[in-house]
Structure formats: C-alpha cells, structure tokens
Image 1 (cartoon, one colour):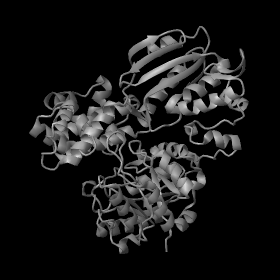
Image 2 (cartoon, one colour; image 1 turned 30 degrees about the vertical axis):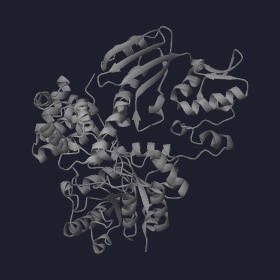
Image 3 (cartoon, one colour; image 1 turned 90 degrees about the horizontal axis):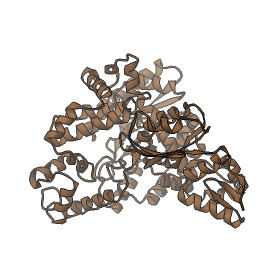
Image 4 (cartoon, one colour; image 1 turned 90 degrees about the vertical axis):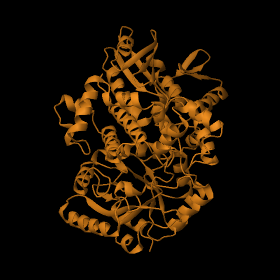
Length: 573
C-alpha cells in the first residue's frame, strides 16, 4: 500500500516540531512545515506521482532535497532523519508542543529547566506548582496546561476529516473492486462529514461467495487484524485508524446505512417514531411484528416513518426531524454553487505560487473571481506586506487583471486585528482594495470580554469586510479564542460585516454550530480556502461540508454570487 500524503505530512510536521524544540534555524523549520502543507493538500497521491515519473521538486516549496526525502519515505515507509532526531530529542516533547499555550519554545524551556520529557512529566510538574514559577508562564497558563492534558487523556484518538479521507477512499475503492461486491459505502461520522473521525464503518452488500472479508484483512495498509468473521471484521490501519467492515443483505442495506451513519441522537429520534407507530427499527430494517416493511434503501425507511430522506450532514438531532416533518429541510449549498474564493496567499507573503498561477488554477476550477489576500505587516513571520509593498502588489494585480481572461483577480489583504482592535494597515491603503479579510493571529488567550470587544472594535472600521478564521483554532492543536459568538454575529449584522468558514482541514473555523447560528441571525458567510498554493484551492470541499452541517444554503454564502452582486454586499459606504 503506498504511503498516504497524510502520513508524509505528519512525519514532516513532527520533524519540524522537534527541530524547533531543538532550536534549529527557523527557515529550515518553516520549510518542513510548508512542505507538509503542500503534500497534504495535493489533489493526487505523491506516491502515485512518483510512480508516473513526476519530478516532485517542481512542487511549490519542495525543492530537490525535500523531494528526495519524500521519495525515500514512499520507498521505505519511514523517515531516517526523524528517527535520528527522536533519538536525540524526547519524542514526548512533540505532543507537549501541541498543547494550547505552549508551542516549541515554551516546550524547550520546560524540558531545559524542569527536565520535563512527556505529558506525564508535565502533569506532575504542573500539579506540583513548578510550571507557574518559570519565567513567562504563571498560574493561569499552568491551569490551562492541566486542563488540556485532562481533556486529551479523556478523549479517544480522532483523525481530521481530510486525513481520514486520504485513507478511506482508496480502501473503499479497493472493496468495491472485489468480486461479488454489489454495494459499498462508508457510514458513521465520516459520512456525516464531521471535522474529526474516530473510526470508520464500512457497509457492503456482497454475494455469499465473495472474498471481500479476506481482501479487507489482506489490504496492504492494514497493520493489525483485530477480528475476522463471515459478516464482520475489524482491522487497524498503519496510522492507528480502526475500520469495521460489515456485510449486509441487500434487503437491509438502507436500514443499516441509516443506523451506522447515525448520529446516535438522530437514531434515537427515528426509533421513537417507529415505536409510536407500533414498529421496530434497527440495522436490519423497519419491522411490523416480524415482517420487514422497509430497509432496502434509506429513502424507503424515512418515507415509511413519514419523513423525507435527509442529507447525512444534518443528522445530529438539531431540528432536522421537525423540519422534515414540516417539509422544510433546507436546500444545502454545494461545491458547484461556488463562484470564487475570497482568501488566498501568493509569493508576495507566505504563499508558494504567484498571483498569476493562483488565478489560472482558480479559473480551471470554474471560478469567475479570486481574491489575493496576502498577510499584512504585523504577520512578520509570514512576510506580511507594509503599505508600500501592498501598493506595489495592487499595481501588479491591476496589470494582471488586464492580461487574464475569464477570471477576475480581486485586490485584497488579510489584515491583522491588533490587540486594541485597530487594523494593521491605514485606511488610505485599505480603501484601494476590493475587499479586506481581517484576522486574529496573536493574543488569542485574551479573556472573552476583551477578545469580543477587540473584534467588534475592528468591525467599527468601515473597511472591515470579513472576519477570517474567526476563533483562530487549529483542530487538536490550538484552542479557539474565547469569543462571545452571538455578540460578534450581532455586531457583524449591524455593521454590514461577514464571517468566514475557513476550509483548511486543520481549521474548519467557524464550527458548524456557529455557522448555523449565523444563518439564524441573518449573517452571511464566506467559504474560503486560505490557500497558500494552487493545490490548496482543493480544500473548498471541506468548507462546503462544514457549511452543510451548519444548514447553509446557497443564499447564505457570499461567494455563490457574481462579483457584481458580491461587491454591493461588501460596500459599507
């Protein structure tokens, strides 16, 4: 089984974290992080590209050295440099650096001054009050660390949706290709497109003589066969993801797909409806006494219950049952409805491709516009633009606009919101832009009242358009900023501002529940990729997933509109 892109990216991310803890050159650290993002966002397998003779050094941010390392990982499944570094730097430090409020520099300080090597050592030091005594820590951060360790200890290991997808889809294709398999689908939280996935449930309908169970257990990516039977088997993949395979009879397939898709709360509601009618609903079908009256497909089951089929993304018992009973399920936004991307980066700041290349890639996706929104000057580590450099970029984008055919390149900026709520660039340069996406990049640990006030004060600036990745969270790596989201959304509605669903798989920010709140409060959202290269534009589908989980329809999304209609919404004059 070829090494998945997600596995290569994880190795590079872990190596970068250990390098930073060791105090390595910042540019070297950034090179591995950029390479990890490039590989993770590739629209095709790096291993497959190598098989086809592709030169990976031509990918943005890779180069010959990193391309050679990727090839070695694909060939061996391991990363020798990482193995060597883990022999010098305790492996547990990487997990520590992921905790909220720490990061590599503070992790190195803890290791150096307290001899802390892993999470168990860190918990003991924090409980003893030793962490608060270190310079730059204090009592509050010490408690934050303890809370984060406790949460992590009580949680099952979960995988980001994009990571699970890279492993799940090849496995599903493998099973569908097995002789005798008639139907196959992945259920569970994966089918509901939750932002993280704990395990995979795969359902198949197959002939009795199909070798599907043996082919499943013998799949190249399987690390351990936990159990194997005639109708159910469980394996664990190389990265630790557990997969259950169930073989169902065709007459029960729809009922099983409903049952194993969930959610548990949704299933409780549908079973209660069945009980009220004197029936029984389970994974084998909908029964009246011993007679199965529905179960072959999901629509049949829902129709028998007096409901209409509902998209899996809605099945969380958040009002979808009542909406279905009223015939008022929303029309959900689809990828085909997106007309452009309102947040991307180029080589002017920390992007890996030129503005022209980004525009051409966006056009190839069928978009009619793309906003170039490189970082502002406060984001020094990202090579942010000061007013003079931004003015130069504006002129370049104008020149490009005259040369490009079939797509409009928009002049934009990702403007930092400073601690006092002011914007990082003066009004005279902001006024020259088509739009401004404004972001929190530091001081994410401010108390809720101050953080909320900070964002609202920024929205008071007439040039503020869209609050990008509103809470600044990184899934499983950085806690969200404490914002009173209802207050922020009310302020956005009053001022004619908008919020973003950031489609980057490690962000997916806004959360689905906040997206639903925005819809209910009448605040439209942009779904944007925050792409740092042409391959990053492919992440749009994950933002669509998040929007659908938030019940958003096409009209709730800014960038389903033509540029002319969108420009009217963005105009706060």
